[in-house]
Image 1 (cartoon, rainbow, N blue to C red):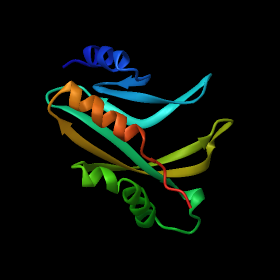
Image 2: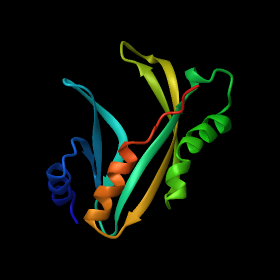
Image 3: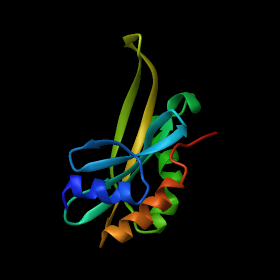
Length: 140
């Protein structure tokens, strides 16, 4: 399935699209009527179809903790996904720069991406709804 076809299915099922990056269609999380954000959940077009979720922890939320501990915090909030068959596919360290001065780093996110293959678009929709309801950011 191509990304354009998958986007049509997702919109018809009531999902809002945040952006498309290659074969990944990232779903939006509506924070307020006039504000949408990256939900951390994506549908991945292709054969097979996949559902992806990115869990994260932020270094400012856990001062003094090292990279391994921060990745472990992100993994721990994604445990319900692992229990359903999701697998860890990659980790990323993402610096959050000051928008007014790109030389300054305000925070660092430690992200762990999980994916699961699905057999059909219907299975994908069900799993996307489940993933959208999960916490995606570790908190104190």
